[in-house]
Image (tube, rainbow, N blue to C red; front, side, top):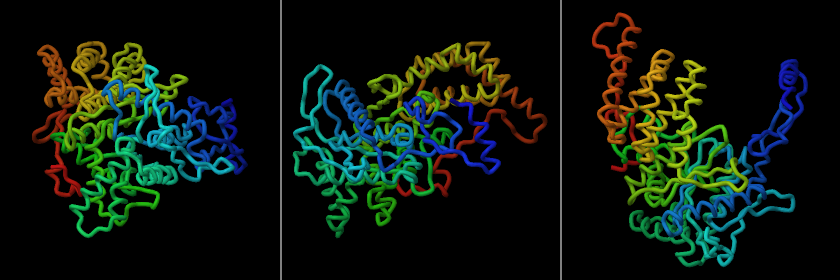
Length: 482
């Protein structure tokens, strides 16, 4: 039950004892978190991933391969996986187990059930049952783990485990077409040997085998979303540079890559980004979707980086394990379409947002902003989706006037993002919609200027001054894509 919380708070403020209890999310089956009102603690990190999470991770790994095989007709060689701390604290390490499974590994446990290392599965045991029932050998996939700053700070055992798996698999004497980790590490060592004269093989191998990356110590989040929010980018290379420079620090079982210059670490990260076949993100919970949380910075950044640094496009997939018993993997584009359908394009959702007034309008603006971000970075938004958003928020007079009155600044953001999408060629808006949008912007600017009262000098109500990285000398990047 949830009727003990106030009593527990009062007891704590009075210096009394509050009984401890496990934390967790009820949507993840963490029923032992009840009753609430206890002094909750996190999970036992020495048991991550749990045996149950390993079963789910293997199942989701197979589903991810199914999705890529259906799209491309072959196994991927290099996968980018976004790892958040919610995987350990809410899902017992399901995604961590999935990464291990993709490399043909499992967690090795002691008699008490604690994870003490990595067990490498025999190559002959690695098979994949296709959707049509055919069973075929599967290779060890090369996985690049893109970690949040919280994973970097609070879960060193998790990324150390994954790093040990990479180094163990890279040492195996197996065919290149069955062990992409070994093949890629060896090929990269040869390339590095040609440009890093005099560096011993052990150091070259360590550099070529880093697969866990995050922001440098003290940094959180990535630069892609910030660049998009500020409109401070011109092309894919700008977004690639933002991603690499803000999340291209390598981490391993031996700690930070302190002896490797930051620019060299970032160059390795950029090399891996350019080689990616797909990027995978797992939904954190049922309460958040692709338009309500900061997920585009990595997946969208990966897509932009692949266009700038590699060849062709990048497949983007979204994993969900809380909605069905078996879990599912679908394209990120499908996830965006679903998130649009249940929110901005849903009259009931808009009605609930209207009831929240200023805050509800701000939430609408946030979702439009993220939709624009997915379009800018991942090219994952279609014309008809922008059309539908415009019609729901600008053409619809009732909704337009509510936004304009309840939160003109949120409405300004909405209209500005739609105009920017059209100006950047992301949305081929027709003449009618553009006329409506321009009319809404002019009316809104008049409202904002009138609210400002008397001002001196030139002033425009909805003006935004944009400075790109090249215009600010203090924004010096260690890695440059151009």
